Image (cartoon, rainbow, N blue to C red; front, side, top):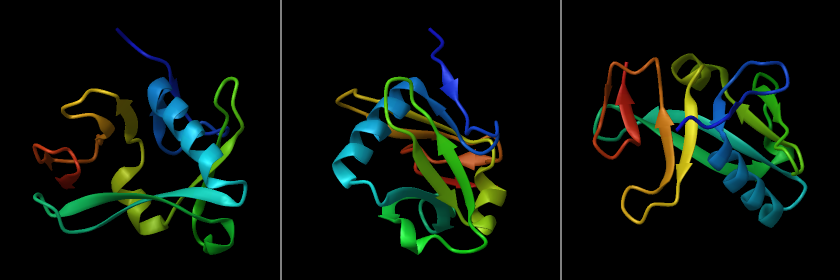
Amino acid sequence: MSTATFTAKDGKGIQITEPAMKQLAALMDQQGAAKVLRVGVRSGGCSGMSYTMDFVDASAIQGDDEHYTYEPSGGASFQVVCDPKSLLYIYGMQLDFSSALIGGGFNFTNPNASQTCGCGSSFAV
């Protein structure tokens, strides 16, 4: 079964599946209006690099961050920001969400990764 995938208004950035869009929209409602979703990578994890994802104040957006606006159907639009170094590793990545008891949560599918770990939260390029 294929689910719809959303990209930012400009058609670029991270692809977000419909289940992930619904979950992010619900989380954004809880966070409040002045928050954005920051997605990135950092050193560490089983395979060398791990994904980061957190809500930050809009005032924390850096001048060189890439901004992407997503508009879920039936929900308020929200912004995703990513620093340029992280974007090199995750551009074109797909973010999905599963409500399964085992292995549930946000899942990353990264076309740039040469190796991923079993938990799906770290990768190597």
